[in-house]
Amino acid sequence: AEKLPRARANDLRDLRPAARTASGRVASLDLVGSGGSTAVQGQSIRRVLSPEPGTWLRSTDFTIKVTRSGSRIERVTVEGRGNGHGVGMCQWGAIGRARAGQDYATILMSYFPGTELQRIY
Image (cartoon, rainbow, N blue to C red; front, side):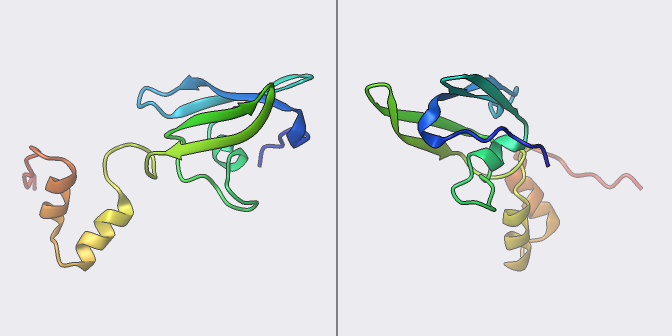
């Protein structure tokens, strides 16, 4: 796992998305302290913003709201929008639908409306 510099929580001055992917997910997050800034990239973002040690944020599809008292950060709120990679089909949702008795065609059509399935062999 990538090692990130340890910073004192009271030294953090700001955190902000520095880059987003084409689907709107955070690709790079800047952590700004009194001594400069550190860029966190890719899936490491999910670990850095995890709600508890040993857990991961569910997705990099989120917004950040920083609440301040003067220049001091009082609270950081991360509002997520789902799980996964953003390609359109939730694997857990598909499993749930299959267990509920839906066939593969019904499941695929619900995730990808307008799609036509054809047998090619």
